[in-house]
Length: 313
Image (cartoon, rainbow, N blue to C red; front, side, top):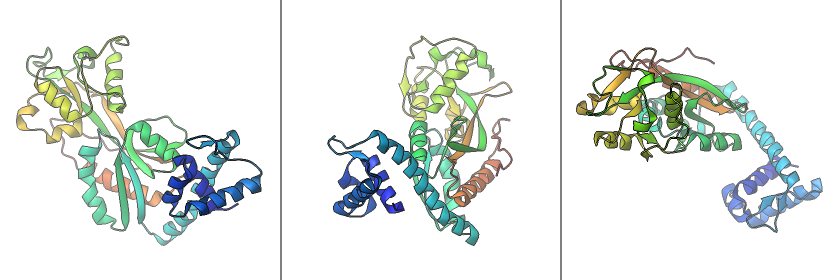
């Protein structure tokens, strides 16, 4: 049994196809198939049911894949140990970011991080929280930036900052004349929301449910982007909530529609998350240092502050 054989098994399990798996592993399909067959012969079990289209794992194959993923991840740790010993911060690093954080936070830290750590090759994807969790567990992401807590035993979290919610209320709305907003003023029935799959949407709904039970209500309108919600709100279709960093880029006319909460302002926790195996920790810590430093320097707007916690290394 070799690490290479286990790596090939994981590739087939992911792609459910020997040819695609071989392409991902940069080997010929016969080479990959032969190595997996040798492993199956050695273990005297069938890992894949080749009669199914697409190929499926057998019951014992599912257990083998789970263990194989642990072994392959641990094998990567050897290089990690060497890199950390040498003080090397570099190599490929796959980072996922949720859609409601990507457009505001990424431009703030990317240039600084690249300049400070030129040997790191960042591969960044915009993904939902659900996609991020799956990819971290499968080893296809090294880390991600997402709203937390996730309460997943396989994933570790390092809080980067707490981002307040800000109300965006158009003229004519029942709350437009209120200088400050109480959570109890919110009604999910006249609020524009992100579509399903966005954790920010869930946070807004939960915030409203603190004071009102809307489990059976139908929402009037949902969208896939915060920018669209702002435009729809400008058309008088409802109010919406924005993460604080999104308010920094809107124009002066739209800023007149911003209304802040009475203290304590509701906020979301944004964290750098990664697998409990703690691979590539030197890059994760470098990311945390750069992002936390930038957030600490963020300008407060009308007494609403981005709160950056103390480092939790």
